[in-house]
Amino acid sequence: MLKILQRPNQPHLRILLISMVLATAMAGAFLGVHLLGTASYDVEGLSLNMSIKPGWHGETIIHLAPLGTISAATHATPLVFRIQLQYIGTDLAEKILSPQGDGLSFLTNLRENLPRHLHGFVWRQLGVAFAGALALVIVLWRPRFRHAIGAAVFGTLVFAALLGCGLKTYDFQAFREPHYTGVISLATEIIPEPDELLKRLDEMEDQTHLLVGNIRQLFSSVNSLSILGNPEQEDDTVKVLLVSDLQSNPVGVEFIQALARHFRVDLVIDAGDLTDLGTPLETQLTEGLANIDLPYVFVPGNHDSAETIAFVDSMNNSIILDGQVVKVNGLNIFGSADPLSSRTEVSTDPTEWNRLLDQQAQGLLQNPPQQEVDLVVVHNPRVARKLAGTYPLIVTGHTHQQSIEFTEDAVLLNPGSSGAAGVRGLYTDQVVPYSAIILYIRPGQGPTAADTIKYDPLSDRFYIERKMLQSNAPTPVNGADQPLASAY
Image: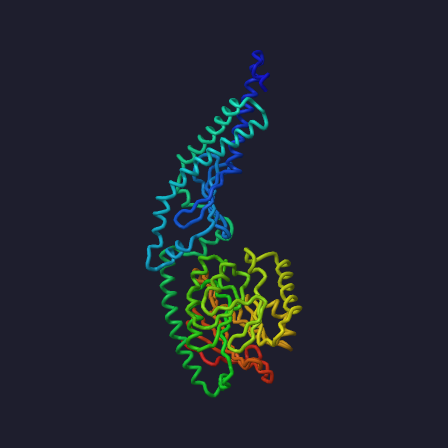
């Protein structure tokens, strides 16, 4: 390289070589920013990853895992600004959700504190741009060190000019017309305008108080039906509230609390999917369950996560089943978590998922407990049906469809969805009933009856049916049973 630079009769070669070196420096600057420029910051309770990548046009992309991305054409230079939300702190989540505090005040603090982090971020980009330019020039051309430094400075200045132009032309108003990808692309369809959302939240609160009052009225009605017989007449009968698929719905929490209180159950069994995506923010919507002063037996579902399980574990009187037998109120309860509850995703390839479920069932069959079991709890009905020949009473969930299924050797109970359509049901007009089952069972002797309960928010009615479950009782015919009681 030096020989070419020193040849006075070949200026065109010198110009070409200098141009190639400078082009290498520019490429190295962008390569350094691409590989080493990502930085993490904690801003007002938000954990953010920020980076700059080369692109065909200037845009900002905000990653909201696992929901998808929001992007907008925000500036004039071919740089892509990427911001990835890693975590929302519990203090910030509590501030946003708290009805007493100003949930939006953190935005003002964020806008005031973010520039301090941006200054450090910009200097970091310039530093890695210089390092990348210097390294690539030295590796490819092996020039004198002062020439390499000069080329690196040039590459850094070019990047700095593009970055400065991008910041100078940055338009925050571009996010008025954003582009969505992933699940979040449904947001504009499922989430109403703020005034509509507040209206629906007010309606939800009114419905919650009405729900509790109707359960009280329904309980009085059921008590008056003495001609039906009372499965609680035996002193050793245990009354179990079966719930499942709450999926972060706060009205569902009130539903479960009201049933537990007014029907005076002895314990609660939850067949999983307490949350929708397993995030800490969703878990906060279910904190009212901690106020239930009863044993709470929980089997994690495919929508639950390590954070969900940790929350349940922190509740008083909670018991998490994952392959062991526990004794609660004289009942031996055996259960196993859904195989996806230990993973970060809530779903997977159907073939792979079925293989994992079959593996779960096979493991429960090959390693049976040493003691007698009164009932088994698993989240997925596919596993429940494989256990039906071995265990006579199995509680399951997942389908959001309430059912009592009789096989030749077992009874399968699915309480349906105790959270209706989940927290997303607050934003849509989809009608899914809140449902649960109250099971009457004598330890060591089996179940005697089950009350299936549904609350239809559209008609504002409760329905309750009683099904006898003794081995000598006739098998109910679907559709033949009439409700024991209903309440407006």
